Length: 163
Image (cartoon, rainbow, N blue to C red; front, top):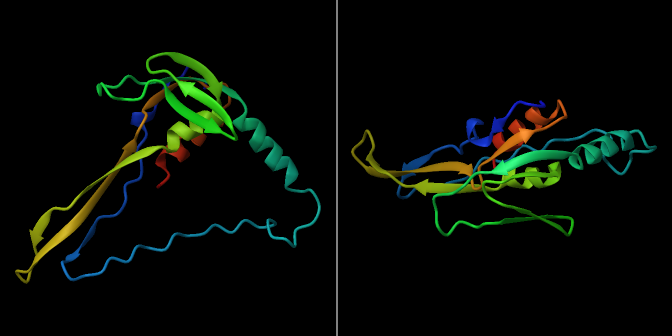
């Protein structure tokens, strides 16, 4: 991906489902699907999975060049604080920075959520409210240079993931 710039606002974030019902209805959220990874139980023996873990750790330690976008909010944090395993990394708005990928992962997963509750009339004439939720990145950023070919797909999956 060297030379190709990725802007985080161009990647669509997943939006939570709308909740609707009468005033007397009870909302029960959908159960989250749990991914079962074979070989991760206590019964697993040997070191077959170690090489994948080592590759993933090395991937997260790679350097990428990013720039945190400026904000129109006069009270927006600058610098933006992140930390991973006790090590801090500050992101300064409007300045390209070379940082480890694990800190970019933190920026990509910090999202703001907005909730609105518009009122409507149901087909039987009863008043009801729906709950509309939207999500967006709290700290939009651009990846200016990522030498690893896995980088764009990795970033898109992080930003698109539901929180």
